[in-house]
Amino acid sequence: MFMINNGYIYTDTIRFADEGRTVVDFYTRHYRHSPAETWWTRILAGQIRLNGRPASPAEILQRGDHLTFHRPPWEEPDVPTDVGLLFADDDLLALAKPAGLPVLPGGGFLDHTLLHLARRRFGEACSPVHRLGRGTSGVILFARHARAASRLGRALQNRQISKIYLALATGTDLPAAFTVDAPIGPVPHSPLGTVHAWSPAGRPAFSLVRLLSVRPGENASLVEVTIITGRPHQIRIHLSHAGYPLMGDPLYEKGGLPRPNSADTNSPALPGTGGYYLHAWKIRFPHPTTDQDMEIVASPPPGLNPASP
Image (cartoon, rainbow, N blue to C red; front, side):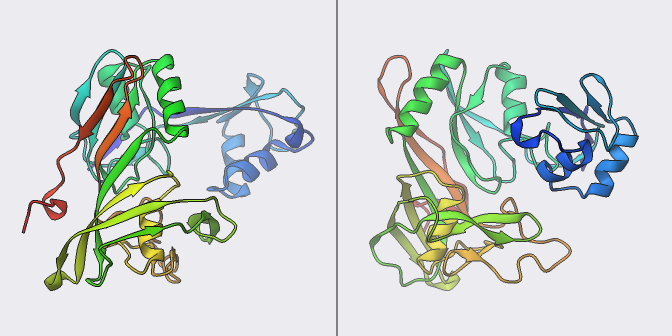
């Protein structure tokens, strides 16, 4: 099932680095999902305005110029929208995100995002404190005003927010407990240009893994993962780097890198491609107003439930 949204207006202000570029060069450089020919067509169709008037493809940009791209309405793929409310007060929300629902707009999604659903239900001031991958289910925090966003953001930066996940990893020979500290950064991968993966030049990342149970018939193990840092796709990359990729992960293989053939098909595996088993189980944090220690728990789906045999 698809839905047609209301379109979107992208705005940009020209900075020193882009002064002297043409309009078409600017969009080709900064919005690489479309080639120059496509941007040329959009400009000629009147979808892009420069300082409030229709732009021309070869116009030279000056610092301080304002560009707007009026993207027409488009069809968005269907996603699960059964978002659960785990906690709410005047300062924050804790929501239970279903697997398959993007948190933020991107990749063709605008209205079919957790951000849109949260703002429609709880007000435009809502903003996510952290991120979850599209294929990941579980608890995510939203601030309800700027002061709460600032305080929770500071707590996240100071590592006062503890995030605990459940994951189904391949293999049955995992240690009872281990730490993964492989750095994470961008590596080449078409068609996006780069994706996050293990990279010696990447940013430091730390995950604590604890074995919960072994499932020999599935060649799988259920693990609890506490992330000390919050790099993109950290658990998927770290468990893959340790030799135990998530069950069903179409992108990452042993070693923490993208599979060599993951971009060689008409429907390449992208970071948002689902199929893996990962659930944000618990989050612990100081309340942004009272400083009270909080813990929010999101019930895991059946395949990731530690209580299941």
